[in-house]
Length: 270
Image 1 (cartoon, rainbow, N blue to C red):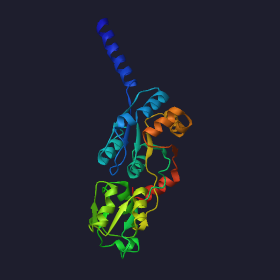
Image 2 (image 1 turned 135 degrees about the vertical axis):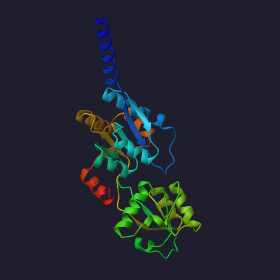
Image 3 (image 1 turned 90 degrees about the vertical axis):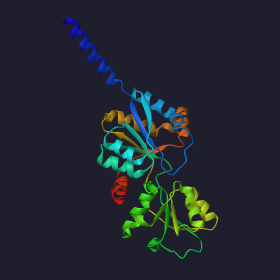
Image 4 (image 1 turned 30 degrees about the vertical axis):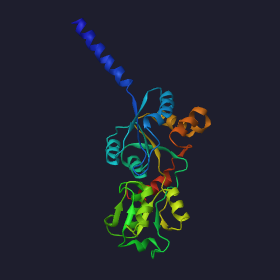
């Protein structure tokens, strides 16, 4: 009997220790309409090492490509940390799913959807898009979500019915050039700049939203959430931090602006 009790206690203790040592999960999504720069497992390794050291617990990476899967995982609280390109997914998680917005990526706080048209297009304003064919990135992309929200503000009815989606943002100008659509939408400043450089026009643009948001589950202690926030904000101050940023194509992070984010949440109808 004593032996059986001892064995049971040993198994219980092992289970407790195993749970205590369970890896934390950093889930990432880098957008559906951009080409990435190589395997995420390699690019995020330096950041994972810094997070693991700071939290004194191993942090592993989980890449979540499908937005619906990411939304579901956040709603179920599956991820301890999340780095999310599509703002609407992150903002919804903060509003409804028990996550705290820690920081957003520097250089991505002014993300806008821009409407491109040919130089000789008769379209002069966003309201002129009624009844026109519009090329957009993936319908679930933050670019298209922002654009759709803007059309709803202008009282367009079911604007999605006029959309012709394409997988990548740099394909939008091709659609306009070849007459497949009357206008096209992009969130890429580079695509917009190249378009105007060759004579095209920017018809209009939406209000900005900060993308590439870093969130933490409130299941983590307040102390641990603060540690992650401080680490991310101070990455540019060390060689290891700068290397981690460079690997993921970032230059740094800025603090979460609650007032700005709440306004964006309301504007996007989340």
